[in-house]
Image (cartoon, rainbow, N blue to C red):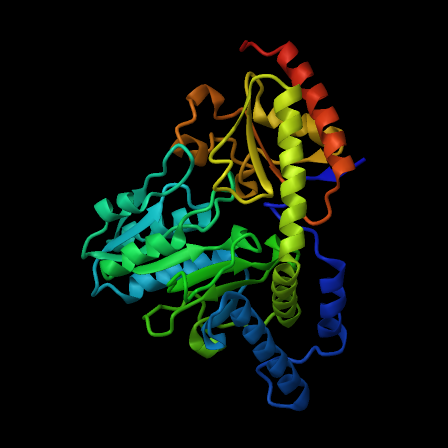
Length: 383
């Protein structure tokens, strides 16, 4: 049996989405910037996709900018807003557990004369609004806090944090990549200026994302050239990907209730069995303020990569943390931020469940996991 429990890294393309986007490769292949009929047909599809995305997050279609993914969207927003609004100040505030693309985009601004400050999180992995109150000042241009953490699945109170930012005249951005469909994203109720999404996290195609922007706020383009997206993001539109993102987002929220019930049931079943059948384990971060598909577990006296590889040989696919840093075996800065002891930082696995997982698969995972932990602990130097 092969079991994929790494859905926070990427999801399998839903066959229904694949069927929807096939015509945009072979029949409706026009360039949305072309003036002839085939191009205008593509342009109308592009407009439809923007309206579908806007409806899903209660935003405005004109504020939806399609990108190559959330990494580009986050870079565009973080760097673009800072560079275009130097007259407001010189400080950017981000949380200490942001995705690497947010961390690096912010750090890259230091050489341009900006200051970057990092919001701490508590032991549950949550940013407290009072912490932002203490850090923010009149020189703060932008605050960026992710809606859901990619490693430990914790859910931030984005609306409360946005309220603090706006009270001090700063703009607010959230990386909402891991939030679909777990949170009911609403840019108006949450009072968001900027938001980022990536299709492959919710059963859409890879290589396409969204930067939702407030057009009333100045932002410098990251990619220039052809003038697409009203000059905000140049480049030929990836229409198959764009349509796939829009359909996948719509489908994710249409089936949200059933999906959440399923993944929570499987996640809870997995944790109960691990806790009961494997000694010396603990959940990383809050189990309550957490998306129901995520389970990050510390296994005492076992090295994370060793567990991952052993499970992989058995056909079980999990992660030790962020898949974006899989080639970098440094300790997780997210687990460091929540106060995990140094000797436990490399003893963790992330299980992220999804649409296609079954109870039989979970039973197989636990069987394999018990064997893996027992074997690795038998020759571990740490007891």
